Amino acid sequence: MSATTTSDMLTEIKEVNLSYLLLAQRLLREDKPMGMFRMGISEQLADVLASLSLAQTVRLAASNQVPCRFRFDDHAILSSLADKGKTLAHAQTHSAILMAGQPVEQIG
Image: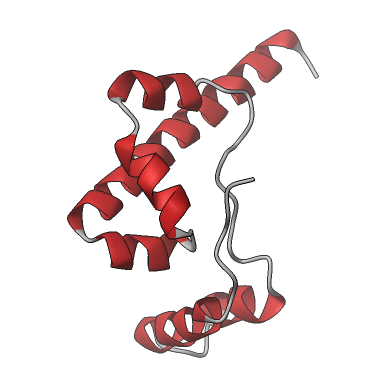
């Protein structure tokens, strides 16, 4: 992999991180229980994310690691969302039911 490709990839990771963290904070500040549900995180983790200052958020986003993870690691959830035979509302409802049964992320 070339240095330019690596640099571009790291820049994209940082952009994804910042977008995710800002969205997470907005969701949690507007409706904490719904934000926790949508992101699949514990109250403890929600409190940490919501309380980050802008400087802390930017510093965390600058990591070369992705702090978020896809909740679609379950085949049934991903298949439900990707099923072209279902309407969007049906697919979203089905996947929400499946994701509600997953454990939340914890700190530590």
